[in-house]
Each structure stands twice: as structure tokens, then as C-alpha cells.
Image 1 (tube, rainbow, N blue to C red):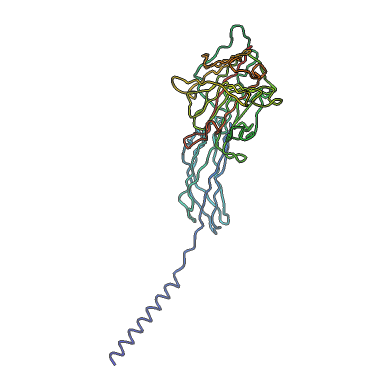
Image 2 (cartoon, rainbow, N blue to C red):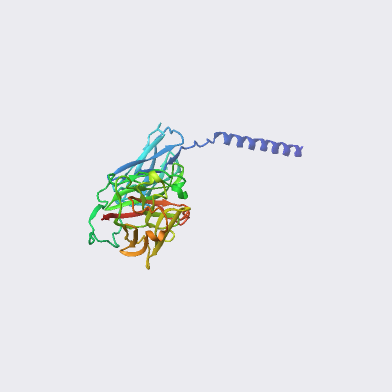
Length: 398
């Protein structure tokens, strides 16, 4: 009997304990899930005047009570007062609402420079949790209208004995003079015959006038199926010349796959085609050789396309560090190429043999900045964008 009593007591004890466990789990309430806050990144285009934008914040669900949190703007590459207005505070999302926003202000500035960014940090949530508490604002500054570059470099004369200045474009003001220039659009035929990679536009993103310079800018961006954009302009039908001295003061870009050019084509190209019309390359540079430029002519020989030319190298530095003057002295049956008033190449008609000589007829100017192609090859991981050619002036003497 004593053993039976012990067993009964043990069974009753186990039963009572299990009952206690069940009763405790029933009375312990399950914690209600709090809504989660998420804040999103934004972009604001900078202009000459102060602009504003908003960080948008949303909750994962609607709360039955007010939700509050703190925010603080934080510097990145963009700085307080210079680029944006400093701010912090507390935000309340009233019960029954799911979203809110925080307005930020960007300082006005017309300079074209690299995009900048600053951040916002959320903290101290009450009635919610923070799923994404940080976001960034990108200030789009790359489309500014003003770009400043050093004017250091060689300057040519404004007068030459026996010649008169018959035309000039000093690129003053803030717009391209369309009475002088056409802007070409697209990728031409097979990348302008060279398998070039850029798409030319007439946008001010790629061609603009600022602080006394014409600037052609190549960008790495997706545009109409191409990976790069740039600018190409001609004086065809507007400014065409036969013979004279031509001075172009320019500062050139550098980097693998970059191909700036200052050149001319026969005004009769639409009638007889290329290369029969003749091409005179006043200056070409391959970005992987930034201290060397090339002067060349292209024409039609007995067996098709023929070219002749010569290069010129700086003894110190490269053509991206300061301005140089690239000149052509073009006379009947003779052409000379110059850099900073130093002749480095000359060609005369008799040296070309029995051809139909195209270089005694009118030609027009072309300025362009190509990316990639058969000659320079493609940009690599070290090629920096945007790339720019600065042209201070073009002057024609006859």
C-alpha cells in the first residue's frame, strides 16, 4: 500500500505541473508586430537657383497610434552651406497614415562638376522599427552650364604680315553660334567609317560654350543603344574656305580610347564623295599617347584611299595640361602644319604623284571628340569620363 500511494502522488504531481505549463502559455500575450520604416534614395538636379527635393518614407503597415522618429542630414562629397542646407528634427506620422516625406534644399550653382551626394540618417523610432534607416541624395551637377579651366598655354598672333583676318569665332557668350556651326547627330555609317563607339548629340550635355571656350564633352552613358555620347560639329555650308592660315587654340583630353580631332573636308563631298573630296586633319590625338598629335591628308589615289602625314611630340608634358595652337598654312599646291608656330610637316602637290589633286578647292571645318574606333581602340578601366576638348578660338586669315 505504501508503494501505491507514492505512485499516485507522483502521477498527480506530473498532471498538476503540466496543467500549470498550459495555463501560463495561455495568459502570456503575443507581442504585436510594429510597422517597419523604409527611406528611399533620391536625386536632385542642381540649377542656378535653390532647388528642393524630398526623401520619401513609408511604413510596412498602418499604425493605430502616432509614430515618431528623428532625422539628421549628413555630409558626403556634398558639404553643408556650400551644397545643401543643414537640417535635423523629429517627424511624426499620424495614426492611420502610412507615408511621409522630408524636404531638403540644394544651394543654387551653375558650375559643371562631378555629381555630389549627402546622406540622411533616421534614429530613435517610437511605435515602429527601422528597416532602412539611411538614404542618400545625389546632387546632379554634371549638367551645369559653367565650366572653368585654366587659360595657361600658348597664344597665337592676331595679325600676320600680308594677311587679313576674314573670320573668327572666339566662343564668347553662352551659346553656340548656329550661323557658323552645324551639330551632327548619331553614329554615322559603321561608326563614321571607323567603328567608333559614341553617339553624337546636339545636347548641351555634350557641346556647350562657357567662359570663352567651346567645350565638347564625351560621357559614358547608355544612349540609343550606344555606351557613350559626345559632340561633333561642322561649318559645312556656313563657313567654307580655300587657302589661308587657320589657327585653333585648344586643350586636349587624354585616356585610352579617346580621339579628339580638328580637321577639314572638301565642300564638294556630297557630289564626289570621300576620299575624292580630300581631307585635311589639322590635329588628331590618340588618348593613350597624350603628348603626340598627328597632321594628315587623305585623298583618292590610283588604287583608292591614300593618306600621308607626320606626328609631332612635346618634349615635356602632354597636350591635356595647357592650351596649344594648332595651325594650318594652306596655299595653292602646298600645305604646312604647325604647333605653337613651329612647322612640323609640309606637303606639296608634286610629291603626291599623278592624282586628281583635291586640295585647291574649298573645305569646311569639323571639331569632334570620338570614343573608340579602329585607331585608338576602346576605352579601358582606367579611362576617366567625362572627357573634354576645350577650344578657345578659331581664326582664319587670308
